[in-house]
Image 1 (cartoon, rainbow, N blue to C red):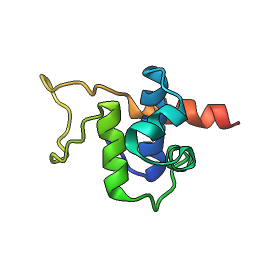
Image 2: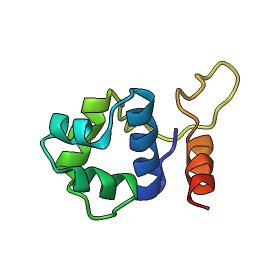
Image 3: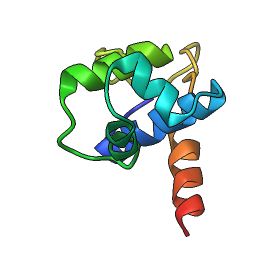
Image 4: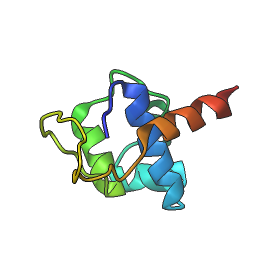
Length: 95
């Protein structure tokens, strides 16, 4: 999956949190931050502290892969999460 913006990352965090049936307060407690911080990150706040974002990803079991971008060809692995579907869903829910 390719994350291009802080909003993309926020959408993944929100989607995973909901899939795990966690509310924002529970996730905040696991990370050691306020619920407001979780709200801001899920909305794509661009200035969130990297260390806390990494802690959030870890708390949700989201793997961060810094591999090179390679085209998906025959035999390549399919992405675990469809970022385009998550972002589209998030945009539709805001309308």
